[in-house]
Image (tube, rainbow, N blue to C red; front, side, top):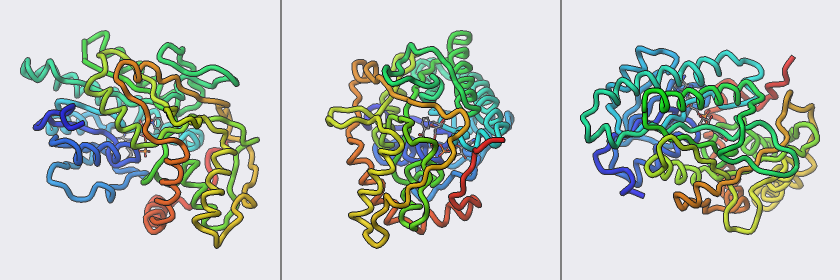
Length: 361
Ligand SMILES: NC(=O)c1ccc[n+]([C@@H]2O[C@H](COP(=O)([O-])OP(=O)(O)OC[C@H]3O[C@@H](n4cnc5c(N)ncnc54)[C@H](O)[C@@H]3O)[C@@H](O)[C@H]2O)c1
C-alpha cells in the first residue's frame, strides 16, 4: 500500500478527527511516508487520541464554512492528494438541525473545491498531472431500496433526508468542478461503516453501550430496516485504492459483501441481536442482553433498505473487504468493552449521553 502514495507526497485529509477520517490518517501515517495534513473543525464527534503525536501529522483546525480559512489551509498544506471526508454525518441530527448540514456539507464542499481548484491551477506541471481530489460520499444519496436490487454507480440520485440531500448536493458540486474546470476528481459512495473509535451516537456503538449498562436498547420502528455493513479498516483500503488508482471523473460504490459466505446486509434487529449474543459471552454480568431490546417510534422518513453492488471497484481496482460482518462486529464489541473510559470522555465532552434524537416534530 505504501507505494500507492509516494514518499514525500502531501496528503490533505478533511474530517481527519472523525471516525473514518482518523482511521485514514492512522493508515497513512503507518503505511506511507506521506506528510498528512488533517483539516478538521474539531466538532462534537471529533477526537484525536487515536492518532496521538506524530511528526508527519499536521492538524489544521479550520471550519470549511469559512472560505478564507479554508483557502489558507489548502495553501499551507500544499497537497498532492485531497481526501475530503469532513461532513456532518448523523441522519438523526440532520432531522433536528439541518442548517449545519447545509453549511458544512454543501457550502463547505464548495469552499474547499474553490480553494483546491486555485491550488491545482498553480501547481507545476509534473505535480499538476498527478494531483487528485477524492470525495467520500454515502450510498444514502441513492434513496431507499425495496426487498430486491442493489445500488450501483448508475443508480439515479434520490436522497430523502437532510443529511443525504446535503451529501448528494456535494457530490454534484464535485462532478461539476470536474466537468466544468477539469479538476481531477474521484468519488466513492459507501455503505454504513462500523468499527473502533466511532463516536457513540450511531447504531452499533449505541447498542453496545446500552447493553453493557443494562439500559433499554432502542430499536427504531419494526427493526426490519436493512443496511449493508462495512468494516472501517476495509473501507480505508478501498479509499486508498480509489484515491490513487481510480479513474478520474468516475464514482465507485463500496459495500461490505466479500468472499466470506456471510451476508453484509442485515436488518437492524439482526445487528442488535448479534451484538447481544456476543456480549452474552464477553460480558455475562448483564446477560441475557436481548431482554433489553425495546421497540421505539421510527425515524421520520427512515429509508427501508440499502445494499451495494461493489462489482466495479472489485473488477477495476481489485478491492474486496477482508472482514466478514461476524469478524468485524466481534472486534468492535471487544474494542468498546475495553475502551469504556474513552466513550465516557467523548460523550461527556459532546454533552451527549445516548439520549434519543431526530424524532422530528
Ligand atoms: N460513518 C458512515 O457510516 C458513513 C457512511 C457513508 C459515508 N460516510 C461519509 O464519510 C465521511 C466521514 O464520516 P464519519 O463517520 O467519519 O463522520 P464523523 O462525524 O465521525 O466525522 C466527521 C468529521 O468532519 C468534521 N467536520 C464536519 N464539518 C466540518 C467543517 N465544516 N469543517 C471542518 N471539519 C468538519 C467533524 O468535526 C468530524 O471530525 C462523511 O463525509 C460521511 O458523509 C460515512
